[in-house]
Image 1 (spheres, helix red, strand yellow):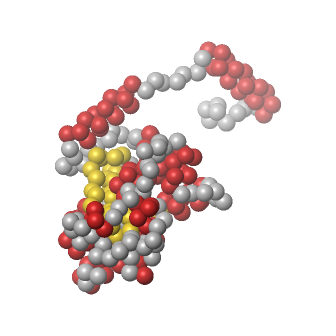
Image 2: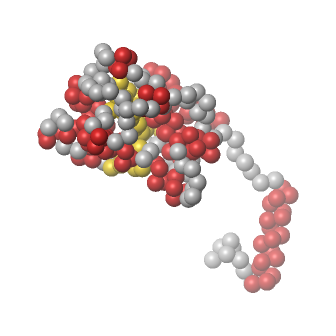
Image 3: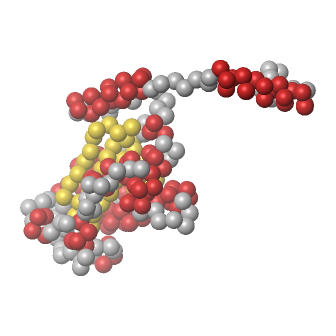
Length: 238
């Protein structure tokens, strides 16, 4: 399964007020493992930031002055996410903004969900697992042991990378289980392929934990006690 962990930065909190996307960051997972492929783009928003938005992202109109408009990067963005399942924290926010951007390009671009296999909202997952608790990305990083010390400002690619770690930890740590060898995506960089090779080697070196003689004897004694009480125990062969 191919997944894209996605985050956006915007000029304000509501697209209905004319706010626009200023950055998109994406991280690719295949079979729940990072492939090393990412996609990131700063975007000229064609409008001012709302008060407070610049403080969150650290971006300015001066920095974005020579960056492409959304119309210029839309096809490249859609090509990267095409057919994948999206993983987004508070998905309604990002999907709403991206659908608004696509709508400005005309009906031929449709909606984001027309291009992907589905959208997984990690905020909903976190609320199910930790009801009544803070479930911001920073709070989840602290709770799940994801290092976010380098996150001083919001950045779409950085946040997508952190969210990828949070998502894998949040969904029962399946990134560590690995039902089979990791497979690099087609077109992965040499660095990404090297990372996969290291992951395979690391998995091979993981120690096997075996019960001691004393633990085995205690287990056998417990089973014998169960047999005396009930005639047999469920661990005995039928």
